[in-house]
Image (cartoon, rainbow, N blue to C red; front, side):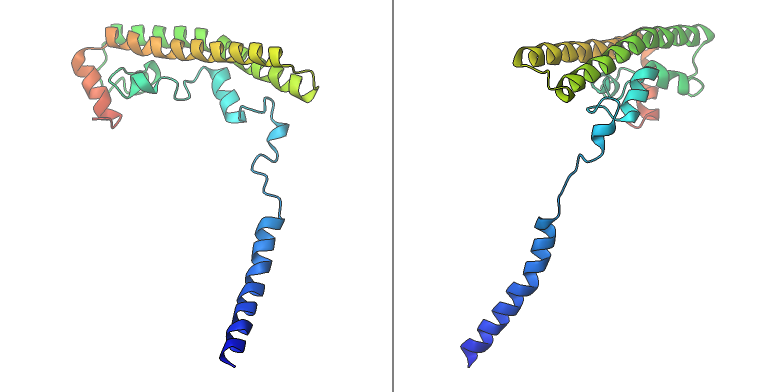
Length: 174
């Protein structure tokens, strides 16, 4: 009798777990559903907007987090950093120059990602084309990153060491 009760309990437990498992395993889990409608499937709309605006998107974190301020953030903190009029002018010029370089490079990256998508969508991709397109995308990403990092270096020429320290404090890094 006791073994019959255990068998019934096991059967009930197994049957109650089964629908939950079936529901979990039976439904299609598609984390990328909808992404196929993007302009460039590997880039979000926010990333595309950032690339088109010349924003850094974290490309210069190696500099930013290690004491090399970014020009946009220096401008945002200009009053707290007590920038002189000459420093402000130089930071504004650096920021404008960075954007002038970064925006076309961002557009190039978007175009390259769209080309890669197109080859896959049209089933015209080959191993050789894949390697070539991926290499071009990687080169563009590297060049874009170097652009953003370069202007962090420029900021250390414009700011005093005390302003660089203050910047890190204001940004919450120190």
